[in-house]
Length: 205
Image (cartoon, rainbow, N blue to C red; front, side, top):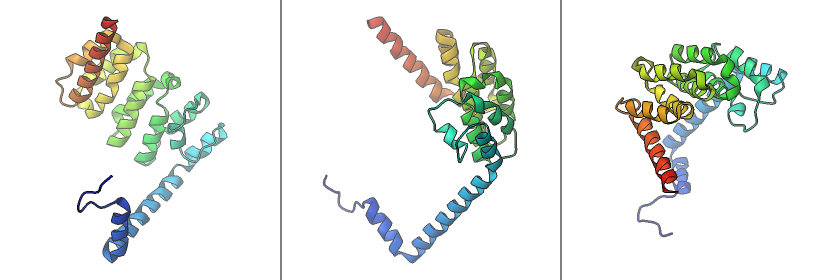
């Protein structure tokens, strides 16, 4: 591929920063801050990691569960126990996303309560993911209430796919009815368009 005049590769960019004392100092300071944050998070989640491993996990971080394809129903009660605790937002987010599994359904009301009580956007996003993933058919009316309540905030958009999953065509109709909500519009319109394309393909067969 021919490079455009003035185009700089990633290697060249990094080399220039390393050669500039001011930029190098900035990069080193940023790396030190990142390392300190990582160390802080490792220390903060030790009670959780310890309880998870006692329960049969083999993890160094709660995010190991978020990123695994394995199922872990035996660990869900441990995660639920730690969910309300005063962990840093990055850890609470990880706990919530680790609870984004169907086996967390027995604790669905607690997940909703924690979602509504969350005062940090990152945590609320993680809890919205958990609420959506753990929801079952009987939870559909409550999901609709949460989505319709503008006081809940923009993370309501993360609940829309659950309404589609549980509500079928009726759920899609509900989503379409809320596509004019500024906080829901983008996600709602995408879901409706995908549903329309899927419907058209079925009709064309």
